Image (tube, rainbow, N blue to C red; front, side):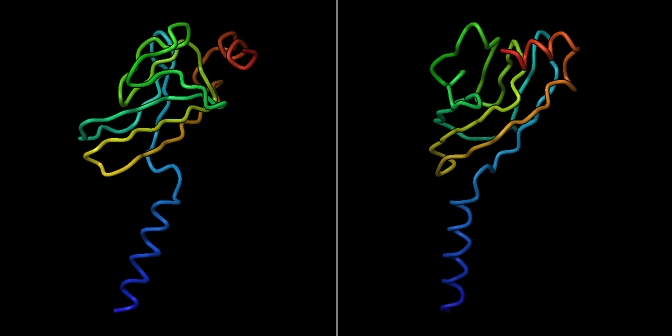
Length: 121
């Protein structure tokens, strides 16, 4: 019985400390770059998409117009590619926060001029 409690404690702790658990994909989409997470069925969600400096680009309340073409609780369409985007959501029906990390080399999605512009800004 103690073994069961120990397993539950270890499994629960590893789940809390596991870091990024939501898988994120990055693809070219007109007119920019699309970051997306898998569909989920949850309600009463707060979400955010942030850049590598943890500056929020978009969330459930709004977006930075100069950078974001459109956003939702599972997709972010940026006007320019970013190498690293952080995703987070907290839904009452999921019982706690979920996080994801979207990474892209950008050069595999853009032509050279777009790539140079993305890494220089």
